[in-house]
Image (cartoon, rainbow, N blue to C red; front, side):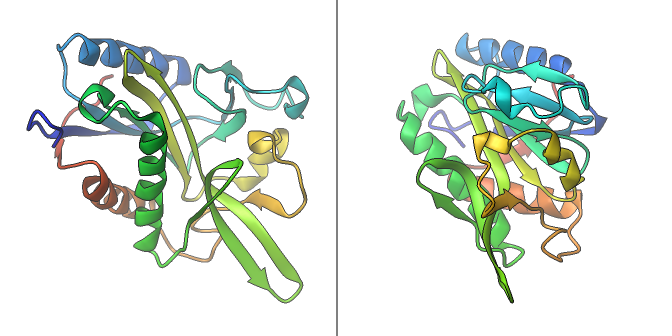
Length: 227
């Protein structure tokens, strides 16, 4: 629940949702929350394969511009990939009732993801200067850090939108068309729960995400997706 005592809506779309349609629905919902006409909402979905460019995206980081559709995004961050097998969670929360603290909000998003990963015995970590949640990969001849979840949010009138993207079982080769989040060093890469050897489904991830979200942000209740 938020400070008004209301539960946060929790909606899941079936199938793939187009990016432009999702952004339009998010912005409409955020405006309605700001006006006091709608409740807070977390919206879970999958997109068809596409790249998005955040407000800090550098043109040179789009390595294969003809591979998938590219969308300019108002969220923070640089280039990222969305596609089937990746759970996107768009988070429309009212920070006017949550302290108006952007740093704390982003830290809470990180805690949310890390808590969900804990359900699968995956140790997610954050790194200064590298937004998102990372896992260490160790083994014979292997020592690297791979990103398993991205974070990119925007606030308007203290209402958040956009959100997080957790790699459950996407085609990781699709990330090769961009420099993900502008990080190109060879010791950093991208991974997923399945890539880590875990037989995790989207539905498994959803359950873990919801349980962790409620520990961090408050109780939720099932509701219909905005579109």
